[in-house]
Image 1 (cartoon, rainbow, N blue to C red):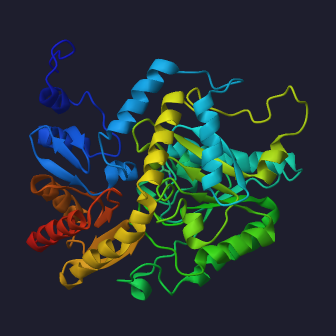
Image 2: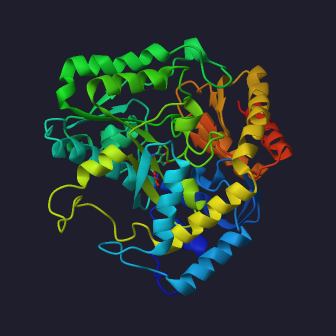
Image 3: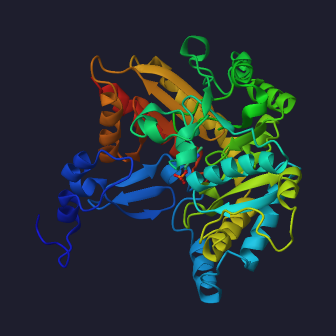
Length: 449
Ligand SMILES: Cc1ncc(COP(=O)(O)O)c(C=O)c1O
C-alpha cells in the first residue's frame, strides 16, 4: 500500500481502501472512484466529485427534508458555536436542549410528555428498549424481559436494535450475540393481497393478531415491549394495513406490554403529520426519533415517553441517578439549536402541509410505472414510495444495483436495497421535480434487460 498519509488524493486513497464505508460494497465503490464521492449539495441536489448533479430522491438517508445548504440553518449553527458549542450532558443542562424537549413534547401526541436525547436512530432505539426494561423492573415486574420486534423491521445497528430488527443480512453474522429472549411478529406485507395499493392496504389488519401468538407462547408476564416502525422504511416502505396499528395497540394494552413506535424515518413530517402516530391515530407509549429533527445536519436522536413511564423512574432517593444511561453528546447544543431552526422553518413554510399536498403527486407519478414489465410492485404513503423490480434469474439484487449505478450517470441519487427502490424526497421538492424524478426512473427501468 502506498504511503498516502501525508499526500492526500481522494480517488487514490479511496481505491486503497483506507476509508471503510458503512453498509457498502466497499470494493465496488473503490473501483468506481470519484463518481461515488458526493462533493457539494444545494437544495434538493447533490453534485458528485466528477461533476454530476443528482436529485436527492431519499433526502440523504431520509434525513434532509429541507434540502441542503439552507442559509438559516448554517447561520444557527455558526451562532450557537459562538455561544455554547458544547456542554456536558450529565448532571447539567443547556437552554437549547431544554427548550427543544418542551417543543418536541408539544408536537407529539398528548400524553407523550418527556424527551430523552441521544445522537442517532440506533441510540434512540437502544435507549427506548432499556427504558422499557427499566420501567417494568421498577414496577416490580422484572420478569418482563422479552422485546418483540417485527420481521423486515430496521431499528439500527446497536445490539438492541439489531436484535429486534428483522433484516436477515444484518443479523446472521451476529446471531451468537443477540439480546436474549427477543422474538418477532410477522411483517404485514403480502404481495398477492396488496400489490399496487395506493396508500394503506385494506387487507392485513388481522396480521397484528400474530402478537397474540407470541403472548400465548411466552406469556405476557415475560414481555416488556413491542417495537415497530409505523411504516417500515428501510425494507422498502411497507405500509401498515388499515386497522393494523390500532389492533397492535389494543393487544399491547390488554397485556400490559409497552408499544414503541420507531419514528426515526416517519417523525417530523414525512407522513404529513408531526408523527406517524398522529397520521394513523394510534398512541404508542414511546416514540423514537432522529434524522429529520436536525435536517441531518448535526446528528441527533431521542425518545419521547409518557408521563407514566417518566414518573415510574422518578422514585427512590432524590440524590440517586434514576436511569443509568446517557451519551456524552445527549442534547448537544449545536444539534438542539439546529433542530429549533429546522422546526421554525417547517412551521413558517408550512412544510408538513406541503407534504400532504405532494403526497398525491408522488402517488400518481409512482403508480404510472405500473405498465413497465419489470415492475413487481408499487407502494406509497406520505412523502414516501417504493418500487419493487422483478429480480433477474439467478442474480438477486443485480437489477437494484444496476439501476442505482445508472442513476448516478442520469441525474438521480437512488436508494436501492435488493430489488427495491425507495423514495423519500425532500419536502421542499416541487411537483415538477417529483414528476421528473419518476420520469428518469422510468427510463432507467425501461433500459434494464
Ligand atoms: C426506523 C429506523 N430506526 C433506526 C434507524 C437507525 O438510525 P441511525 O442510522 O441514525 O442509527 C433507522 C435508520 O435508517 C431507521 O430507519
